Amino acid sequence: MRLGCLPYLNVKPLVYKLEHGGLPKGWELVYAPPSQLAKMLAAGEIAAAPVSSFATFYYTDFSTCPGICIAADGPVISVLMLSKKEFSEVRTVALDTSSLSGANLLKIILDESYGIQPEFIRVPPDPMSGMLEKCDAALIIGNPAMQCSKDGLLVMDLAAEWKKLTGLPMVFAVWAGKGITPELVEVLHDAKADGLGRVHDIALEESEKLGLPFKVCDEYLSKIMVYDLGERERQGLATFKEKLIAHGLVPDREMAAR
Image 1 (spheres, rainbow, N blue to C red):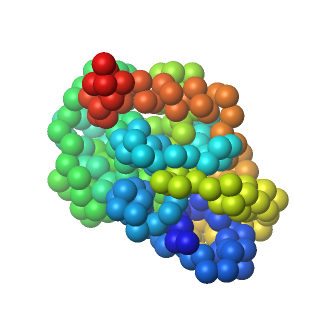
Image 2 (tube, rainbow, N blue to C red):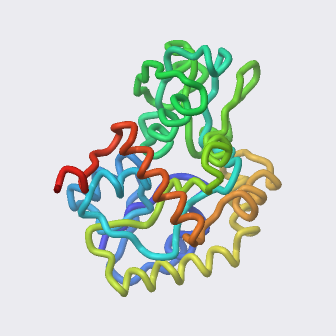
Image 3 (cartoon, rainbow, N blue to C red):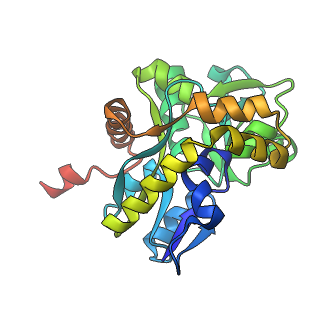
């Protein structure tokens, strides 16, 4: 079995055991950004992955693993819009091609909270030398969002904006696939339990790899990220889906079926 995996710090507590000898015999991990993982799942190239929540609304044949998510109930620090202008004055936004949930969340926030519908241009995630040369603002996610310089820029934290708009957590990703078997659910929950018990060790190891302070990585994994898909997270997911439909970002399949 081939499992997809994100190349970001936020997923490490969910996959640390799998990366360190905990994969069942014959299973393997395949790394790709969220947008690519969704395409690989849809094509049947991988069995499951921690995929963007947006993808689970877009691809109707995906099922999800209960009880696991990658979410934030307030500022997330790794899904950001960096802007050269006041947010209400932004007219062009470079979208990180890696992103699905973040890109569509940003469209909702800019429309509902700031009353603007800028032009969106999908480009590789390089905010300083590429994205912001072409556009007023740029969306950047994952490790690059934590590593890049914000000097002279206005910073919008999308999870903080979502919490302000809805009062709910923002669920960025869930484990999903076309065949979530009981065996896979057991493996994923066991890996999650193991990883959450090693958060400080993971933070230390990853801080050295990423060139980020240990305190930043440790607080990110232990205090900012939410890995339990509970009732409030499910409400956040449902609200995200409702707003995606309302903004025409995913089809209203229930209405179409009537």
